[in-house]
Length: 391
Image 1 (tube, rainbow, N blue to C red):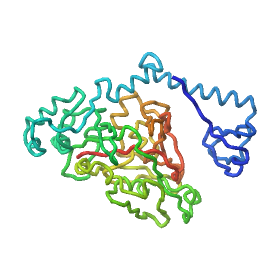
Image 2: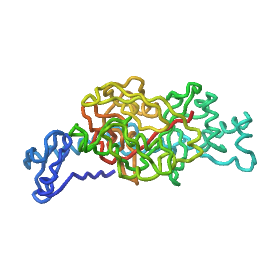
Image 3: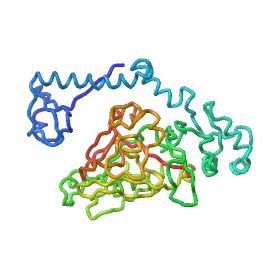
Image 4: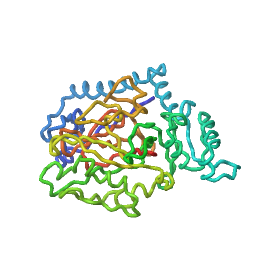
């Protein structure tokens, strides 16, 4: 399969005027002079040295070939690199190992949601259809009843998929955990955790804070998840999302999707009715927030580096990898992997995590388009693939 790479480019004047800081080993090209610089994550463009023609050949072309080589190793499980990738596509529901779960009427029965919920034989019938590619249920209430009865592991399996309407468009969600998350409501015991299979849209993690005494947050926003605009919006059911300042320096984002309906208002209302808040954790950066960890309770949330089978960063007490992700590798990995890649509009898209880069006040962790853990400024707009829990 052909792979194309595009390097970051601009004229020498454009580079000089913008004077950005390139990420470590990020390549920048002056399109008018054909000169190249390689970033180190610290120095601005003007402080970086140009690479000689020889160095360009060794670093640029050899480096790109090396990444392609890693993809080939991943594909060895399918005999060849290409077959390996095809195999993983099959896991999304085409091989029979994963069931596509849709909410369809029980055709011709004339039964209502209440009669189905009250009749154990009906639930047994639902169970028998799992494994043949379709589960026929009347509503999300049926799924919730299965979960609350502690029978989630009997009826569902990791990797099963539902079709979920969001903003009048159908999206696929994956079952990533069964009884993995702890409901905040102490009267509830069991849970079913789902995550959007691909990115829904792009969103800014945090707006710049022009009055913040921290120069980095002044320009690039904050990587503190519990104070972020994205966390507020994901858990809003308002017709017009209302942002609430969490610190003295917060500034509302004027970008989409924050200028319209809250996330829960756009989600299937019947699904929203069966969602419950769960207890979650997120590390704090050591640069401005003192390190440690924040605890929070939400219905909708972004995943963390730990939950995606990555190495620990900062305080991760209480966090654990979701089985959906740990099934793909024998040990934790931050490397290029196809099973963390998500798409938006048909193309691989970098997507936000809730985890910060703990050494900085303004840089948030993300998953890059090749599946490895990356990081970027909090004021950037990256894809989002939220998770939620039926309790």
